[in-house]
Length: 231
Ligand code: DX5
Ligand code: ZN
Image (cartoon, rainbow, N blue to C red; front, side, top):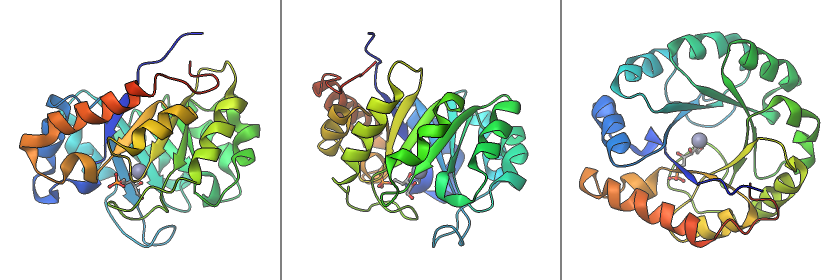
C-alpha cells in the first residue's frame, strides 16, 4: 500500500474575478497543486459562474492541472467544449441526470480524467457501479453553489464509505466545501486525498496564499493518511 501525497486544489470561485488570470498564477506559484474551477448554471445550483471561454482564457496562465467541477444539468452537451478549452479533469454530478455513465464515458473518450461528484444528501452507493470508469470521486462537504459555507461533518461518512469501496483502484477522493487547516484533518483521516479550498486560501489576499496552502497541506499530512486504505 502506497501513501499518496495530498493534493491541494484552490478554488478560484473565491478569487477576485476582475483579475482571474493573475489570481490563477498566484495560487499556482503559492503551491496549489491543481486549480479547481467551479462551473455553475443557475439551474442545477442556485448560482451562475462561468463557462468554457473563461477556462480557455485562463489556460495560458499556468500548466497546473485544471480540475473542472461541473455543477450543471445537463452536462453532456458541454463536455467537449470544456475539454477543448483546456480542462484536464472534468467532474459531473451523479445527481445531474439519468446518464452519468454516458457522461463519464464521454469524458474519458475526450482523453480527460473523469470525476463523479456526490452532494451531501446522496448516498455513497450511487457511485459504486461507476468506480471502474472514474479517476476521482468528489464528495461535497457543503451543499454546492457558494463558497465560504461551513463544512458538513456528516459527509465524512460518505468519504469513508467511498474509500472502502474504492479498495485498490487508482482513484482519488476529493473533498470540496468548508475545507480549512482544521477541517482538512478529519477529511484526510476519513480517506480524502485531494482538498479543494476557496475561502480558506483566498480570504486574506495574495500575500497569504502560500501560507494558507501550506497550512492546509500540513493539516492533511498531520492526519497521516490514516484512512482505511489511504493509498
Ligand atoms: C461550492 C464549490 C466549491 C467552493 C468551495 O459549490 O464547489 O468548490 O468553491 O469553497 P469554500 O472552500 O470556500 O467552501
Ligand atoms: Zn467545487
